Image (spheres, rainbow, N blue to C red):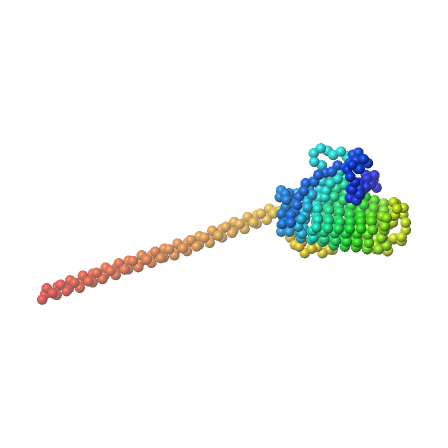
Length: 391
């Protein structure tokens, strides 16, 4: 492993586990790490996006990126949603002047989940355009969080603490640690973890299931830094790591873990149990039935049951044929409406003409009847006059 990777790993531990005051740090190092400020953004409890100008599209309970987002911490404040990267990135980059390559940087996280349940984070890329310690996803005091099919190049891909019943599955972590603290009943499966100082790291966890992962060329494939218990490390591929699995800390409860049916190839040390600042000791930790060939780590979503609220497909832009079809449908609809209107007008016109003609005919008939009656009266008067004169 390179000196750079070792330095970044040590910096990562200092930032996350042993926070020092700025004054003390400055005493030890005259050029402290440079913090990259992050602008706060939110998916609020009512589902709205703040600021609304971010390239995020909301479709029901699905949130899709429509462009890259840099130097934002997006905090998800509602439950039962899917945050879909849709092929875009949420990451870090230097604003303004070119950064000094000799001063380390730190910042993040890109996505923040606190006190939440039933959230899927999928298909997001977390690039790291600045050398330093950056966090991609931080999950705190949450449950039923699914981190699925993402790619992280940040020094810390996932940081999960005080959470339970979560899944980290089918992701690609390059030079990126996946870290868990005080969490339980978490599944870590079908991930590719490579070229990191610590691939998967555990602190005070219980019932962590680590299976079907590919851990390649890490300084430590899996490291247990503090007492953890009842963890299962089963059917993983450990390839070309300096140390495949390392147990470390003043107290070690490795005897309660299950290490079984893993594949080991090219590691400096497959399993190492360390105590008292690096002095190895043997408590009989070994793989119970090591595999002779690699385990399958190809991921398919069907392998895991995701929450039932995953029902809406990603929005797709309308194609030319779709636009033509919609245009033709609109034209046909307008023509049908025009024809119906013309027919109704024609019918009303005919009815009006018929009524008018009927009224006119009735009037003529009455006039004729009046004329005949008058003529009949005149004839009777004439005859009566004539007969009177004859007498």
